[in-house]
Amino acid sequence: MDSALIPEGVERCSFKRFTLGMIIPAALVIWGLYAAYLCWFKGLNQTNMNDSYGFALWIWADLAVIAVGGGAFFTGFLRYVVGKDELKNIINFAVLVGFCCYCSAMLILAIDIGQPLRGWFIFWHANVHSMLTEVAFCLSLYLTVLAIEYLPLLLENRKLDQVPFFHNLGHNMHEVMAVFAATGAFLSCFHQGSLGGVTGVLYGRPFGMREGIFIWPWTFFLYTWSAAACGPCFTMLSCKITEMITGKKLVKDNVYNLLAKISGWMLGTYIVAKIADTLWWAIVTVPTTGFTFMEFYNNSNNFHGLWILILEIGVCGLLPVAILVRKKWRENSSLFFTAILLAVIGVCVNRWVMVMQPMAMPVMTFDQWVLYLPSWQEWATTILPVAGGIIIIALSYRYLPVFPQERELNPVEKS
Amino acid sequence: MFPNVWEWAWDAGHYIFFGGMWYVLAILFLGMNWCVFKAIKDTKAGKGGGHDH
Image (cartoon, rainbow over all chains, first blue to last red; front, side, top):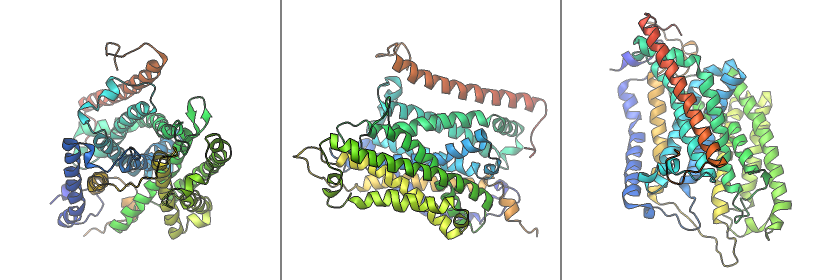
């Protein structure tokens, strides 16, 4: 039915099978849109957010998708600015994943602001003393950059490519892509950093507060660093999952190997910096705020006990580093998959720890630990962009030449 | 966002924030325009329509 749109020289499942596969994600999108409608028209009383959790599931999801979407900017930086030519075989997919992640982030923010009709105020009447203003600027501009980076891939669709103007436009965009990629890397560094800076400057919240350089707390640099380290891991993880679903090898091992090695060293240096930051905070910063280190972990009925620190730095930090930096281990497919999965979980746990805990942590003697369980509307609107992302990736894989090595790795027998 | 908008001030904060924003927008606008105009020129010259990139 749609064979004229499918790239030449590759095999895809039947249109019927593809449509059946999209039923569950489409149903989740409809459910999420209904929940978004409720939040927009009835207000944020549809959520279970409260004074202790003003930053709740949405903001965590937002920061997590932005962190894992960092694969697009860092892979783009390595490919176009540093000149790692092998990465041309995964850059399309990295851009696609990044595009889905940043669309998700913008959608979640659009619901979270509660009054979307005034969303443009952040640009029009910008508060230039707020780190979140910088985040809003960079986030929306970087989404534009990702859309520009995604456009040439879209124009390579078999039918669109036959139109001379589209063919020439795609070709010209490839020629100047380094300019867009460098702009994207610049924007991404700043908004990843500013998201980290938000918790770092909360002087009334000693769990998140950090010292730093000039106006930037250490969390500013740690966020950018962790996104550059774990973003490519999410790109590789998504790629591996796509390979599992399609039953095809889509990217050669040397490409995975190179990106995994770079991610491993980035993650390793990040974890060393993170440990140093945590030690400095525990030994030097925390005592000046009138707290002891263990108070932060003992008073939460174990919901945010010391286990979460061990999970973030040990299990999801040091362990993947050990696997990714060692050639023999990262070439083992099971260990490789475990390492990239743990790295992705690690950065999501880090965003949880840095966003949820500082706000919820009691800082006054009369404060209590408050529990928070997201409402179904919050779950639905958080799942909505994930399901939407699955649909975008599935459609792109079906109709666009996302993986340049696919034809070579999966030769089609001519009947 | 613009000097005529209420609460605008000619201070370092506005120079940095909006300077950066307009600078990036200018790069994206000029970059895309270059691609579009060159594509129009190439198309008029009879290029494209194949799979040669």
